Length: 176
Image (cartoon, rainbow, N blue to C red; front, side, top):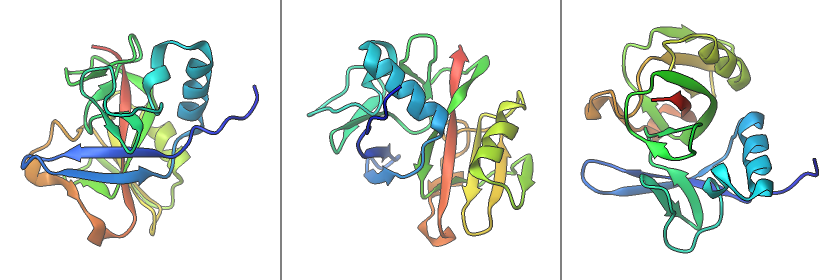
């Protein structure tokens, strides 16, 4: 496969006050990038994800932010039909999407120090309860969670710039 640039990707958050927050997605797992490249070459499936858009994106629960298509924060990317879904996921998928400067303040069920993002992804994939994880870059702390942005109280999920460099990683969904 030849190497292609996917361009800069951004995410959007529409909070309970209908305020949009926009930021650049700076880290993608190699698996996500490879899947997007393969699907974009095939011209179908997940080709809309991280693709160029002028004003809107086709799938419901997705947004066009700075000319890039993404799922709303907390919505699962369905690996069956490549749409964004907010229903309960019965079988978690294998892809992760990063939401920088966001963090779930729940009682995470497993916190591990001195871990890479890739290690966090592998640990989350190996645990059926894991739906997402938070990562603190300054301490290399991985906090696995059975929650998502949609399943925790709105007071527990916010934009936390004061925590330093943190990111929330949402897992995709294989089946609902």
